[in-house]
Image 1 (cartoon, rainbow, N blue to C red):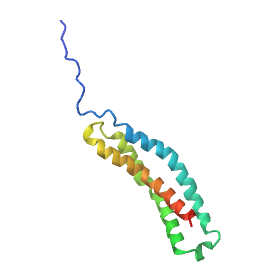
Image 2 (image 1 turned 135 degrees about the vertical axis):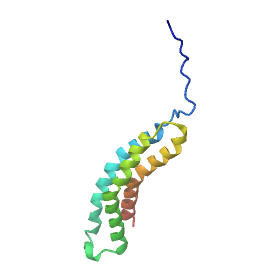
Image 3 (image 1 turned 60 degrees about the vertical axis):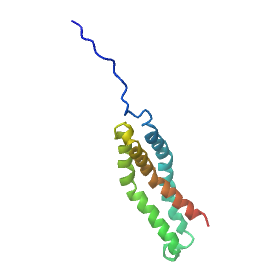
Image 4 (image 1 turned 120 degrees about the horizontal axis):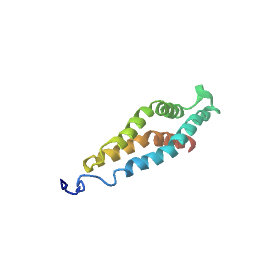
Length: 121
């Protein structure tokens, strides 16, 4: 006895492009993450000419922000990155997936922006 099964219909709520935002975040994190660690770590050399005690307050504030983001940015980046991949691949989660992917890239991009502000006179 054979039983006929109906062909599987495509799920109308399925998002075929759900992988785009997490993949873009992955590529950006592979590039920006190591650069942020390298240039953020080297940013302490900005105090070589003035010493840490005589440097302008703006420079020290920027360095403090860089090191705070380097230290605690992973607490934002890693969960947001994992969540952007782990959300169900349905259309109703597309906006949240894109925002989480953006949030994952934000800490290393902010570190690089602050380093560039240190370099620019």
